[in-house]
Image 1 (cartoon, helix red, strand yellow):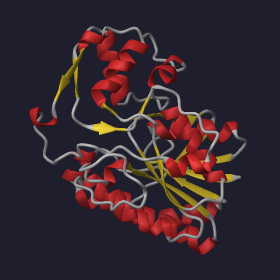
Image 2 (tube, rainbow, N blue to C red):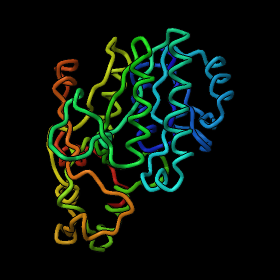
Image 3 (tube, helix red, strand yellow):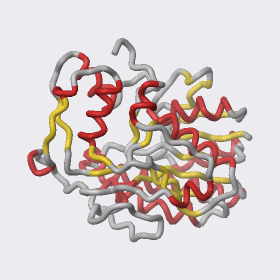
Length: 294
């Protein structure tokens, strides 16, 4: 199947390119300003703020499906520039969805657990999406356009972890690198997610793209944990000094926006659709990964 993948130069995007190729798909890899290639697939720079460029490129590529993983994903960046965040996260998604609806093509869109306000645990797909972060609002506001596409699927992702394959270090890589140098790092122990490793997340998204399922689904790990627990277990799995992983609380860190206290996701629907799905523990996922010289 010919698939346009947006956000191909990002952390998740690189894993998606690899997974799509492994499953025999033809990949057209869109990036923002990224150039070069991913696993031999050339990156196609495309400005998602350019309405005509999106439509023209989709007409040229003529995909059977669009896996839309691109986003302005840094919460602080969206808060500082909400208009740009709206153009990239909402309007571009709506334009891609409109093209897919008119051409009767499949669309899978990656949303986020941060569409929820964090006032409870284990959110289900039909729970009210009431984000308290500007970033979460943009992702929530884009979801209806995708659901309106015949066969459109919104995949809400939880916190993703693992080594970057994009050529650029992400938060997780930087934290592990600092710990490997003996530098203490602090992580919230009062904010809860359901983390999932990047490799499994990519494989799930590709399988969902291949299936005829629609609506909204939560893609997340099976364990609810704080970022402090995640990083403590990661350090242990990688043979790093766990004493360097310090705990702090959200109120101790100045923030321009409130953060959800608990955005853990219920994945019952995902397991109904993929009953054979195996989600590795933090330890197993990282044991099977590579962190340079760590």
